Amino acid sequence: MDYSKRNVDEAFFEAMKMVDLISKDESEISLEERTWVAETTYENFEQHINKGFLEYRKSVTETEGIALTDWSGQGSILKDILGREFIDMLGGYGLYSPGIRHPKIVAAAKAQLDRSPQYSQEMLDPLRAHLAKVIAKLTPGDIQYGFFANSGTEAVDGAMKLAKMYTGKKGFISTLKAFHGKSLGALSLLGKAVYREPVGQLLDGVRHVPYGDADAVEAQLKAAQEVGEGIAAVIAEPIQGEAGAIVPPDDYWPRLREICDNYGVLLIADEVQTGFGRTGTLFGVDHWNVTPDIMCFGKALGGGVIAMSGFFASAKLWKVLEPNPFMHTTTTGGNPVACAAALAQISVLLEENLAGQAAEKGEYIKSKLSVIKEKHPGVLTDVTGRGLLLGMVFVDDEVGFKVVSNLFKRGILIAGTLNNSQVVRIEPALNISYDLIDKFLVELEEVIKSL
Ligand SMILES: *Cc1c(COP(=O)(O)O)cnc(C)c1O
Image (tube, rainbow, N blue to C red; front, side, top):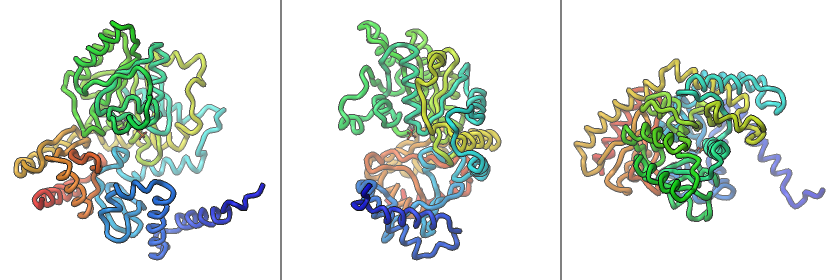
């Protein structure tokens, strides 16, 4: 084989350079090396990832000179490679519920890494089976069986397959502004034209109704029945995340349960973002005591340490996967390191009462924000969400963007995209200290005053 047209030597040299660098003790990395990382990261994004990001990221546009380069973190503090520090009010979009690098979760993953990082694909894997048992005990009702994957999107895709196989129907009812992931399957459920239109034809038979409107779901099910179009499932987020922390009316989930039962349709709760304590209860549906037929998990499941997701359902549904257990598979999903991290995550969740902390701290932030809102009604118009999945609604996109970028300049990382920054999400680690919350609130009010 002639590899002369490729740069095999350079590939080896470049690979070794980064491996050597990350193998060093933090104190042994020179300023020159750090600057090299920051600068080449920018170039590599430009040349090999996507130039587009360089215009959208605050970490590039709001820092003079050298763009911020993700490097290390602990708890609710993020550090770039040059040592610049940020208070993390974004929590990796809900990934870091137990904080960054929670010591117990890191220790469990490391211990398993030293034993066996992946499974053989043939022997029975004890950690996966044990984790499924633990989650079955944690989830409501008769939810008992689970399948593990790597991303939330895969969990949603798997849930869709299970619903279609169990019911023999192809349709889904999803909600406007919903976010369920961006694979072709999950994207079909997503409720925003901007991500759907350029892709063209998606899955057949998906209908979208306004979120929080149970009557609209019922009307669609009635219409589908009348024209003989089968609906496999209704899917929704317990509290909409990406849409801006939207809490539905209190009777929404109980009514969805009732309506789905009446029409013989499955109910899927996408708990990828709301699961494992985020909204102040173990799961989002726990606010309304509803047991869905299928639950999807992701983000915080792996404790912010390893990518991990899964979908769970009752034994009744799982029967369709039993005759051929290879109907749905993954080589790396639910690997032992991810399962070790997830088991440790759940122990931390329960030991530190993260759900209770989210409920309490969410209320605290909301009460402080309502004071700020009253003082500055022309800037902050509303506060949405529950637990530590909160949204600050600003008068318009531009003001929201200014708040986000000014907070960024003051060392606070918070979510707000250029596309839609009217609603800025507050989604920190559930065990963030009151001290850091107060620092954030002080800076926020300063920024709002300055506008
Ligand atoms: C983030 C998210 C997903 C997708 O998860 P990925 O890990 O990004 O694939 C799906 N559903 C909800 C509700 C989410 O918030």
